[in-house]
Amino acid sequence: MRLPSLLFYAAIFLSTELSAQVVFPQNLFTPPLFLPFNLAGNFGELRSNHFHSGIDIKTNGQEGQVVMASADGYISRIKVSAVGFGKAIYINHPDGYTTVYGHLQRFNDTIQSYVEAEQYKKESFEVDLFPDSNMFPVRQGQFIALSGNTGSSEGPHLHFEIRDKVSEHPFNPLLFGFHSDDTIAPVIKNIKVYQLHETKPRLINDTSLTIAVSDSSNLFSLKQDTVYVFEKTAFSVETSDKMNDTTSNLVVNKIELLLDEKTIYTWHFDEFSFDESRFVNANIDYAEKVNNKKKYILLHRLPGNNFSMFKKDSTMTGIIDIKDSRFHDVEIRVTDLNGNGVIKKVVVKKMENRRWKMHDGKWKMEVGSWKPVKKKKVPAGYFISWEKTPVITKPDIKVSFAEHVVYDIAPFEIVKEKKLKGTYAALFSVGEETIPIHSFMNLSLKPVNLPDSLSAKALIVSVDKKENKYAEESSYAKGWVTGKIRHFGRFTIAVDTLAPEITEPQIYTDSISGRRIIFTVISDNLSGIKTYRATLNEKWFLMDYDEKTGRLSCELKNATEGNKSELVIEVTDRKENKTVLKTSIDF
Ligand SMILES: [Zn+2]
Image 1 (cartoon, helix red, strand yellow):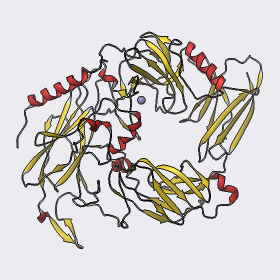
Image 2 (image 1 turned 90 degrees about the vertical axis):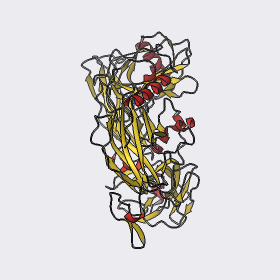
Image 3 (image 1 turned 30 degrees about the horizontal axis):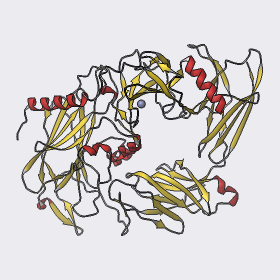
Image 4 (image 1 turned 45 degrees about the vertical axis):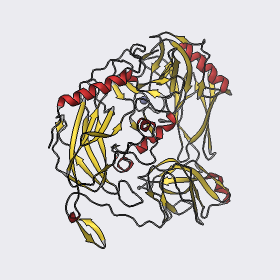
């Protein structure tokens, strides 16, 4: 076995990292917090249906840290939302960049009063404002907001982004010269090998083998017995990284797959476009995610994976095609942004036929670790691919697809299961939930025994293994309940006749800020909250809404002490069930 020289690789790592860094200005931006860059998340992380578009800087587990403008410019956008980045500020800089600050608790007083005035004008908590360039000019280091936990945030932190001002493509912020200590190499936890079928249709994940990598400290730990493969083989890797001040697992910067010392696949990107973010599902082993909540990054390109990362080399497939019977070296090189690297090597050899024997008229493995998965019988023609999708019309179910629905060729079938109690259709298993949907599926189900009086309350629900029901955006029309759905699984029809719940409002004084806060929690059993509206003495009253906690809250500041006021909160769900709570508050 040939052992490559350590110096040779060190040189490669160094040169690629340097060439990547010269593109971006190194002294333009300063850190948006006084705190060090202790990251809870980094750029390009493979999250649920999207790539992470910035860095998440930890704020000592607390809200209320001072957030500063990272460079001179002006505030070009202020967005307030119950989801996503929550309260967010966008700053345009003269050099062609935009910085974004997300999950803020509150804005500085000037911005806060402007936003509140707009919220009252529009009678809406959620606003998306684009102030004129002369309205809020900012200097580098200027206080703009306090950090928080608003929107889809799982703990106090600042989400920070650097985007191209025109294309709005997010860049990796760590390429802009922010200092962070990082001498820790990434870790490769597992390597997965896939056998690709020679005959069409090709099904990925049909047969795979996982190699656990135990020794992660040694750069050249090559302890792996030969893996016998078919002619066409592909790989994926479970890997993560840490920085010196970081306890969270971060995504690595680059993964290379080499066959006999030649790079055949590179997973790496410094920017992407938001409208291609869903391609994240084409870059992971989606079945591992669904079944085991694990993230394996694919080191091969699925036929329908049109992520812009491939623009650099459109011929790159990562598929290993061995024709001879020699031993071949497969290497996986993983590096972080600071050039710390780890390499794992696997020796592969084409499998001889004698390792297989006939069983029930099919070739089965005789020895070795390969475990061919039992394949379901699929009716002829029921396959789905990036280019071709079936249209299925049956008396009780209709399925059609938008373009570009799956990344590969996959089996597709509909199985009718027993009707569940309290539902209004059979339970249909549609496709395989381990196969991701890129665009969407039009699904229509025919209701069974649904009274006319309930048709407006009917919706499609997806049903998990424990028979929990989750609402899909859908509605009744002309004898069918129809929705646009972005995942495969089991579906049926349910009705939502229950109105949302609103807890009794409570008032407390925040011990740190001294602010008096009134809050209530709103929730819905099934279809989800569509609108919420509060009035105080019959006038629209601003209450912040946080979807993840269901909390509606407001600071009591304009009311006069000793006054009694009537607070009314109205909440409707997506099936127009409405709850009204009236209460008198004693200021
Ligand atoms: Zn983030």
